[in-house]
Image (cartoon, rainbow, N blue to C red; front, side):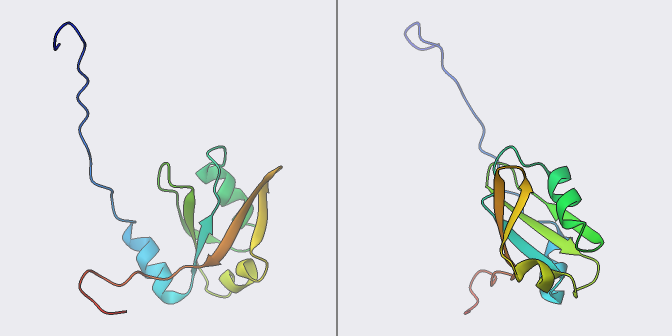
Length: 110
């Protein structure tokens, strides 16, 4: 308390990097980057919807970012998904799919 007012202390936690499976899938062309992911869309929703295109190896949804990464076991499925970028995962909830690319590391040019 400070002068009778409660004080709230929050600890900032660093953002966790995506799992190595996302990085490996992006390099092999198996991964897609999803944007416009509404808070109502869950990992299970994304797995159920994109699993219709082919077997998934991973689905990563960082909290409170509005994005996701979906990785297929076979790279032939990702182009089918991004050929039509808009996908209605749940009624009234459309997400945008694009190929996933690795970001260059710190200090690298690219």
